Length: 229
Figure 1 (cartoon, helix red, strand yellow):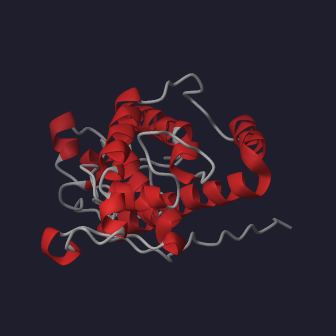
Figure 2: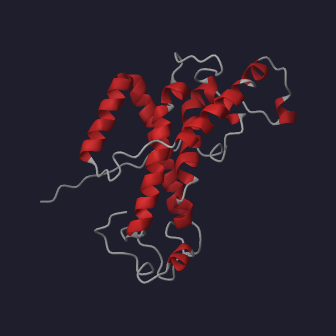
Figure 3: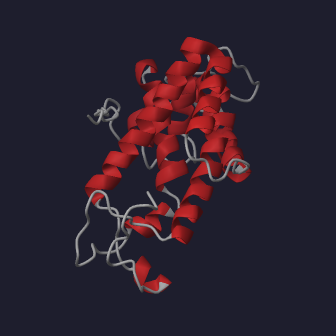
């Protein structure tokens, strides 16, 4: 997304329709990005537990000051927030029956998430719904351009980059808004179970479980910084 990088040869002179016919993110690259986003949502949860919500807020403000933030006033996607809350409420009605074995999980397809897997399972669902199932699919879908894909080439038009950033920023805003509801065992609502049962609730709700089979152990890639001499 570095606009200072040279644009991919297939971008220049293409109409919108032609641009959308090409995939500018390979399957392997998309898988890697999915892992990065999921694991870093998971890490934000751990940081909030280690430092408290004030510590998490401090970290996010530092990121806001240090990193390029073209959409600082982008509002959260309230439709995503409402869908997440409604799904959690619906799934919470099933959790007691699962725990007391009032239903045959094998026949009805119910799923129970182990407490030790709850954080990453939820992070996978959030990454899939709030990142993967967005207009980024328009960039990923299609066939690889004849010129191939190189790591440091600009794959987005300026308009396309702004559209992706707006949508993902709004969606991840709803993730931050819902963090205590999803990940705080002290957070209580009459209509919802508390963490870690929130993972089982979402797994058995109408929330899109597209990321439910993603890895629970894959981690972010390490970054090495080399100082110029």
